[in-house]
Image 1 (cartoon, rainbow, N blue to C red):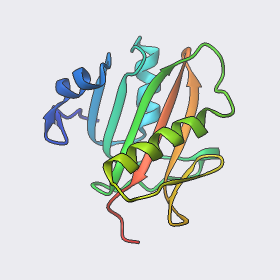
Image 2: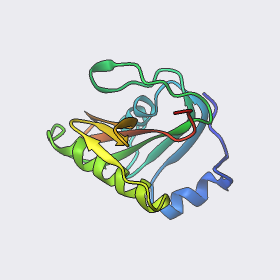
Image 3: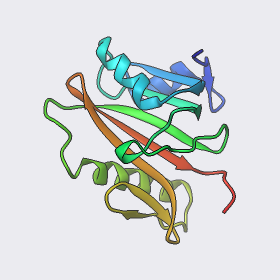
Length: 151
């Protein structure tokens, strides 16, 4: 698990400043961004720390379902949200709503829907998912978005 010095053409430190994040890690290949961020939370990473990966080999969805995360095909990202209580039942919906709105801003004319409890859809087809997990006094909010897979 080697961390990258650059992600999406910019040094990782630039992303940390833009996102105002305590820690930002980018990886070519990683088991799971959620698992890595939970490790960092246990080591004291602050709120809004971020882990991104070009590929996940052990990505998962709700109830442990496998999430296919091939290299260069999507966005696999986890963010640490402050929380002293277990994940609220509606938090995945709020994270999904934020992910949907971000995609719509990045791709004008595209409408992203949310299918309860954690799927992101375009035209009735699943294009992403949200997985929120509690640990170390925070919530790890993971988002997986397929962006370059064939229809």
